[in-house]
Amino acid sequence: MYKILLVKLSIFLLLTSSLSAQDLEVPSPKRYLEISPLINSYSGDLGRFNQINGGVNAALVFNKPRRGNFRLDFTYMYVQASRLRGADYVPPLEEPIPNDYFQSHTINFSLSYMYNIINKDNFKLYISQGLGLFYYDPMDEEGNKYIENFSDNDRGFYMTRNANETYTNFTMSLPTRLGIMYYFPGNFGVGLSSTFYNPLTDYLDNISDFGTVKGNDNLMSVNFNFHIPLQYQKLKK
Image (tube, rainbow, N blue to C red; front, side, top):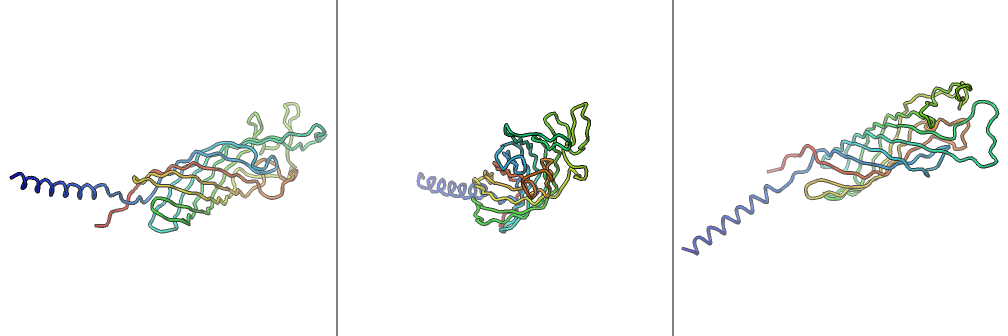
């Protein structure tokens, strides 16, 4: 009698273990929500990636079973930079007077193609290239916008650019990203990435003709990425 009960109990435990293993099988997510606090640095006429600021990135990352996928990114970065003048610096006697400081709230919205150089289930090394729309608005220490470029000496406002130097708050960007991701058994992931945003403007800092650095300004960020799985793919029976 005890032997029969023992055999039945063993069969029950084997069946339960088998069902539990099937229940614990987790399908691969179709998409991830990526949340990324970040630090950023600017390069232009007021510095060369030597001043650090912060921001945040949110992305929708597609995860079809292949090496290449798309991602949509929304990035906010606060940027500021300044240049210290030497003791022998003599400011211009007439306007325009180029600014030595700027701050800006920037937003970048982009679509990127992401290629997984290493494409394992729990580890990915990837590179991506995107096309985006970039918003910026350079201001002085008190939040006055440089883009208006008007003169009111009685109120302490001076032209900072030549009269023919005009720009808008929007430009295109070509963000290039390199990153790694590690995924836990539950499909949640953590990773690190670095992005050059490559905005197509030389006026991120409001300086162009009076600048000493040729070419467009740039922003670089280091992102600390957290992936949250969204819609899952169906398991094959």
